[in-house]
Length: 582
Image (cartoon, rainbow, N blue to C red; front, side, top):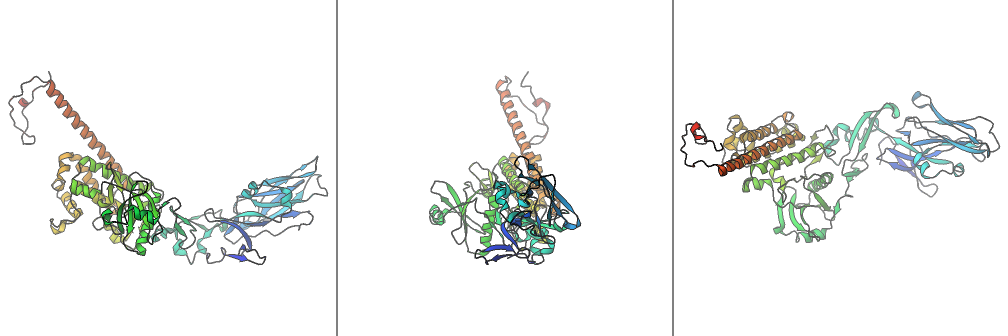
């Protein structure tokens, strides 16, 4: 297939018995095509003058009005004895010329060569020769040609051999213009390429006054993790060359034939099993529950997304199996479960909670702004954040994620995410942005602060949802009524308020007013440092207290009078304060 106006149609000529590809509308023989570099190599005639058994000139291809032009990767070469060779172009109404002079070896009267660079966007040219000096002899044959510099450089030019040739390879560059994309207009439109999902190409349009026809040029490329021809419908396919491929029998053995006792968890896309490979490594194997086209697409999407990511706080994809009807994904095994389990079952300490959410924020910041094309997770929740053996956070479950072009939102027609974590803006606009992940992360922050579950029937109907419960408590200045007891016991009031304020900003109904994940990560890093400093100061004070007690010779039964506040009310009397060190 080809773009509809036929310039890119390639036909096969079988008249010689050896099938030869030609560009249909230009009748140029095609030798090589590069979609990535927007080039193709064709045959170009050599221009001869005063050479026996050679025609005086052959017509070179006139490319004006076509999507093609002669590339500056070519080089103009002249061979002769005392001749000036000139290449002249009348492209776009301008006369442009370039050329060189070929000297002569006086002692041998042998031909010499010269080279000249090309003007940009050359679409048509003619070659002329002018003799000079007293070098005209019976062998004053001279010729010139335009040739691909790579071919010329790689073939250690033998000019005697080239003289016997009629054609040499020349490189053309090609462009795709909006005028040629009527049929595929919506598909290739730069502002809409993200609505189809990341398997569609990334296209950009720009005006280039030096390009062919001085028109708006369209360039497309397959996204990271995909390869193929971005100018074809569904031309970009998953690139699995760098992903380890497991065979189905190996994974079946590793999971004890997918024994129910090996199940680690079940989600919307499938079931995850614990397995042991033949080399002793423990892994997690994700297997789709239902052979459904949508689920297969999500699994493939997860392969692509995770193959692009290299971050210590993102679960690592070890490989996949493509032998089965539904792809099987193999991940590193994360042994300590989810932060949901630790928040609601084991009640983590305050410092650990802060470190975990700071790591998650750092991973999301990386995905949004430092991972090539921005990647939106789209299903951040406490059950999708795992803990490794050192209780480091690992963001997991990228089945619904999308990589998007910079400065684009992701317009989608299918609901993704989990109720309670899903951005309210999404329901209004149907657009998923980086701020949608920020909202979901804000819900996780509230879980961290309160230890409460997402929905509780024990709360009154208007605040059964955790976000509503949190916002109501903040508005009523009753935050500490809902803060987890361990957080209140271990945390400093200012730090708890700082995290709560950050969570409230993340949960703003307007996505535009929410902070970016980079700003969230920086804020949590600052709060962490504050908590560490408070802890260090507290430890120092405790050490100082013990040291003072050890060296104090004062009587320990000093009566004290309490007239003020402390934890039991009142302020301490000055008589309570006895100098421990004199």
